[in-house]
Length: 312
Image (cartoon, rainbow, N blue to C red):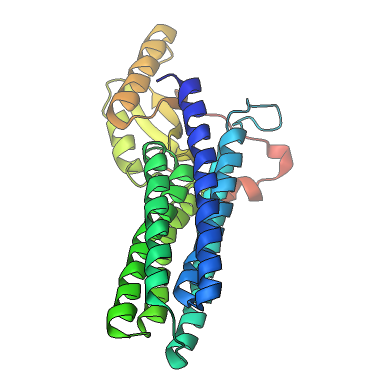
């Protein structure tokens, strides 16, 4: 599938997911209000947050198609990361609110209609699972979509739990299962929100991607014949699919032909070994700090403006 076709395919799936989720919200909240079920209403509230997450996922998906500009030289790819961070953070706040209401209901339980809870929650389970399946393919390499996918998959299992609580209420009269299920909602929210929150935060902090070792990359480059030293190494991701690398390479001699061949060898090695295709390498024959693998950026903040930047 071409990039454009994949983009349009994912856009249409997000639009369909929004429509399905809106139906879930209306059905669950209305049923929860009529039946006085905190389990149904909390799940509807969770789905309302997810609706915002799906809207944000769609909006940022549209943004990422915009080309890079002089003001945004990396384009809008970070928009999806910001969306994932916001969605995850809001979900964690939602978990705190549902926990509070759930404990209140544990202390002061109210009667609910188990049969209707089962029916509405079963509808919610089917719809949530359908939405998750719609987003599954796009979630593999897109953090923005992955965040929305885990939200909807978590909702599906939570709705299944509400079905079970409805059965317990209907057949055994255990009304306490309703607030207990709301606490299971909290666990599902926390589990689904934490990993995207952590991953998006790491990307915004420009950390080295978790599956890569900067030390191993430096060692691999340093082992290439002709490379004397590797330093000022930076590895980060604009988003999970776009990994960047910059470094300084110290070599012996200034033979331009040898240097060009060496540069191509380094690029090919990094691409083959680590899957990093956006590489900026500065090659020099002398360096004032050849043993600092990672650049100390604080020195740039304390350097006098008249000194400028020292290029190796």
